[in-house]
Image 1 (cartoon, helix red, strand yellow):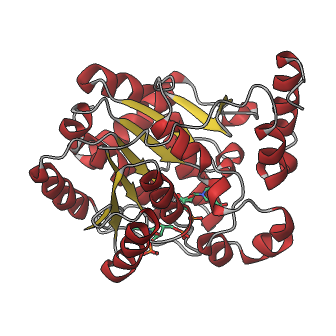
Image 2 (tube, rainbow, N blue to C red; image 1 turned 30 degrees about the horizontal axis):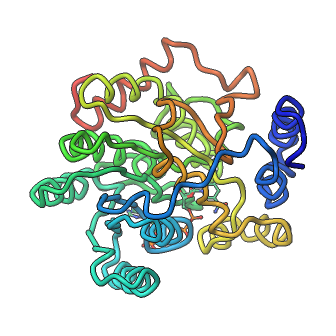
Length: 327
Ligand SMILES: NC(=O)c1ccc[n+]([C@@H]2O[C@H](COP(=O)([O-])OP(=O)(O)OC[C@H]3O[C@@H](n4cnc5c(N)ncnc54)[C@H](OP(=O)(O)O)[C@@H]3O)[C@@H](O)[C@H]2O)c1
């Protein structure tokens, strides 16, 4: 397929994306990797001497991202809520790259804004510059649960905590032309921005809908955050969805889906490929876009899920008010 003309290569990639099942599965990645439009892998040692923080690095895609980023030379900071699980991954990273101290563990419950403040303060005190902050921590609770500040859990974990953490870490990020990566989900294509009910207080709660709404929130904030963080600190922001990857989280939260698609699920390494690429590729990819398999993708495919500018502004105002940031 490497002999395919570039226009045909792009058309095939787009067709895989729009037909969803082939594109999101391991098939999509296997085909795209062979196309002439596939961007080059980051060079060996491309992150040597750089610091990268990954939230939710104790499992699944976060663990894999930590391993792959360390393999490119980065010092990785595992931002986790369970010290024992974090220590196990840190030891695994050190062993894999043969560098004692390649990984360091930091405790933070990303859904709890006070915990986010404590972690960010401690990280800032270390004085380390951050090349990238990967917002990977995620969950899909079965029933409606709330965060320490009484926000619906997925919105707190996927939107409020990450936005506040980034804002507080801007001094570290701006010290190394930082890149912020949201690991979002293709599930967000099914839901609109919940401007009128961001905490899912009305209607019948289902975890999958709440999850998809919060992931939609991550994606719709991209233009706002890209402008805000570039202006303040020269920091870029990106979102990527991994497709469907075999992880403990997928097995636990969507067991039937995971079992049915098992033969075509991506490996964790494939699921996290674009995250690693966004952090390590040079020059930095354009800020404010949604990526999948190393290419920008549309943020909406259904008209009903596309917000107006006014809705996006109101959602951002809710995020700013909820996190105590100036809007
Ligand atoms: N796998 C897929 O197919 C898929 C598809 C689309 C999007 N994603 C996204 O990819 C990311 C990783 O998911 P995964 O599949 O790798 O799931 P996973 O195996 O369950 O990993 C999730 C990670 O998030 C951490 N986490 C959960 N709540 C947290 C909190 N309050 N504070 C700090 N960390 C917390 C977990 O920590 P513990 O170890 O302590 O539980 C775990 O390390 C998520 O954002 C998910 O939405 C995955």
